[in-house]
Each structure stands twice: as C-alpha cells, then as structure tokens.
Image (cartoon, rainbow, N blue to C red; front, side):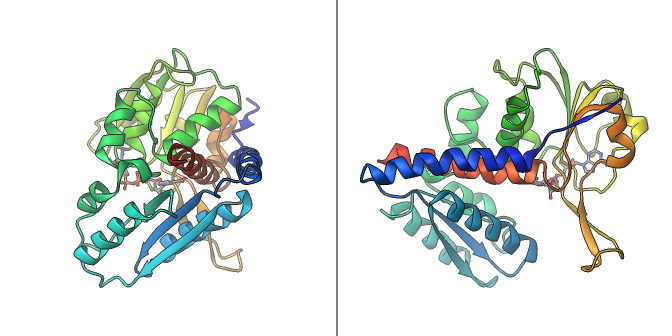
Length: 293
Ligand code: NAD
C-alpha cells in the first residue's frame, strides 16, 4: 500500500501563520500581544529543549514570552508562590509549568494551583472535566494537536475503531476522550490499552486508527497492524545512531520503516505530533488572551 504522511511540521507552520495574522490584527487595533510564560525547574535537557521550542514558536507568531527558571532544589511552596504570581499577573495571559517536576514536589498540587483561565496546557481538573463533557475549554496540547492534524488532512474518523495505547493524563487519557466525542474528527469507537493489557496485539490488529503514546522505540511492529490503518505515533524516544554526528536520533513508538507500507496514513517522528503540540499551545494562548481582553 502506498501510504500518505500526516505532516505535522507543515500543518503547524500553517497554523502559526494564521495565528501570526491574527496577532497582527490585534496589535494594529491597539491590543496587547498575547503573552505565554513557562516555568522551568531544574536542568533536564529534554525539558529545556521543549521550553526552548515553545519560546521560539512564540517569537514566530508575534507573542510575548518569558521563562521563569529555577533550580531543582526549589521548594514546593516557592514554586506555588511563582504560580500564584503568574495567576495574578496582568501581563501574562497563559502559562505552563514544564513537567516532570522534581520528586519532592507534588505535581498535582502545582497543576491544581494554576488558574483554570490561564491553564493553556489544559491539565487543571476543571479543564479536564470540561473537556470530558465536551464543553469548550483548553484541551491538552498533544491530543488536541492530533485531532487537528487528522482534521487538516481530511481523515474522516467517524465509525472508526480507534485503539489508543497509553493512559497518561497528558496523552492517552485525553486522546481517548476526544476520539469518542460526537465531533469530526471523533465519533470513534475507542479501545484504550495500557501496560496491563492482555494480548495487546489482538486489540491493535482491530485498529482502523492506532494512536501510540508509550515511550518505547519501535514497539509497534508490522505484524501488529492491519492493512490500511491510520497511525499517529506520539512517542518521542532517543536512540543511538552512530551515523549521526550527535551519536543519537529521535524515533517514535512505531517501527516506521516496516509498518508504514501497511498504512493509509502515518505520522513521521520527528515532524508529526511534536510540532502540532506546539501549534496547539499557541492556539490555547491566543484564546486565553482573547478571553482576557
Ligand atoms: P507515560 O510514561 O506517562 O505513559 C506511557 C503509557 O504507555 C503508560 O500509560 C503505559 O500504561 C503504557 N505502556 C507502557 N508499556 C506498555 C506496554 N508494554 N504495553 C502497553 N502499554 C504500555 O508517557 P506519556 O507522557 O504519555 O508519553 C508517551 C510518549 O509520548 C513518550 O515517548 C513521550 O516522550 C511522548 N510525548 C510526545 C509528545 C509530543 O508532543 N509528541 C507529548 C507528550 C509525550
């Protein structure tokens, strides 16, 4: 089968261009540029890279951005105080606290301290609840970005059997919730698999749409999927690659080379879901700014 690429890089650039045009209009009309702030705790290179990408994207679309950087020995109270300041800031429209946080900090407590109206990650229980009810709210950037990616490529998901692998609060759970909604894309019959699922392959073989959010390189192999499947690979894994100058490269959860020929559509990694996550965060920030103005 000749497969088509769900091109997250190109789609993200189109969305960024649309947002930049709207920001221009806001500024021309005398309004304030939307402002996204990111709280970065510690020195985790992946977290630093993600925050760096987000700030860079803000520049591209004409947003203000700021990073609040603190060492990993920050106390929970100090972090909660920063969250409170950002909640009350007139300047900041939306902010994220980059996860994971050091183990001495209760991440859930921090998530719940973020004002739902500035929670552009969509992680606050109030926003999660609204999303689950199909109410208008900030949706978590990665699964919402997947929905946009499917929509903008004209992939009709109504009636599909979607199989989601993963049950994290940032990807697997909200992904399943969005796919079962009475929306387009959406209207799927959803099976959600996880680390305790028995006979995973019996489920993946039924998938018309397979979403993987596992974090294990090349986990999904060609014998696990049926012909014509649509695959969205959320996984981002760094593997050794001596042919690269850096000695490593990023890869997804899917054995792309051998699985892609069986697919109708598939995301590349990198260049699939990653850029869509950033585009959606920008969309959420624009919305937060518009709601506040
Ligand atoms: P997580 O570790 O919280 O969740 C992984 C899930 O995989 C778990 O729910 C677990 O039940 C499931 N799992 C693990 N082993 C399994 C097995 N053998 N069989 C079936 N299920 C299994 O991770 P996460 O935060 O959900 O992220 C998942 C992946 O997506 C990671 O690679 C992460 O880097 C990536 N990610 C990408 C983006 C993006 O923008 N593209 C955003 C967030 C996360």
